[in-house]
Length: 328
View (cartoon, helix red, strand yellow):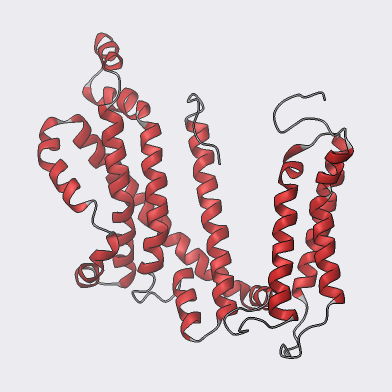
């Protein structure tokens, strides 16, 4: 088989075409199951079949992607994801079978895919508003946490005097989960929004500080010797040598901080804020609106996955010179 590069080889065998159309076939099978298998008598609520619309749209998109690969006569990303996509839809069909078709699970706690999609259709604008509120909270907190983390990491990693005083404080306060500061935050800050920013910023600050400090201290001394021969000042050595060389460590700290900030966000939004996707999930759980809870969880999964993907894109662009880093 002729090959150009990984993930871009040519379609040639029948097995290649089988894999290419596996996703479309699995989605079509899911559609037939939805059309031919009757609903359980227990599931008496009649709502519009958004699930079926979703399946038809997915089927059309998968066919379009498959035919696009045929026209190009190359496999591409869709070919390599086809098994996973198809299996995911089959798993969704099984879940729909045990919920909507057979009612084997309690409907109030395990809503059918159709009911979850109906939530997006009816409450989509409000869910989006809550999601944007959470993103605003995250953006402000990340800006503060990353800025303070970089500043603290540079001071501790570069200056001996700052290392003497700040390093013990970082090692004592840093490992404490930011959620443990909830009582202090509620007392010290005038609003729950400000308290939430403090908690999320704190969860980002520690890993960025530690990894920035580690990165600066592990920069090769020869780099600084060359900078000295060129007459670089302390600021220039930090800005043009130490910080760029430690960027791989800095991004590891940012990724760690991002993951912990997602957890902290869910807790912070239970402190009394009026919006937010974490607040929305907790509110719907209290009123037993589990279809809305699932919709909120899906929103969180998509949003956070997109954020991590964006961070990796930024990392790849800034660190294009680095070899062997993890791809996303």
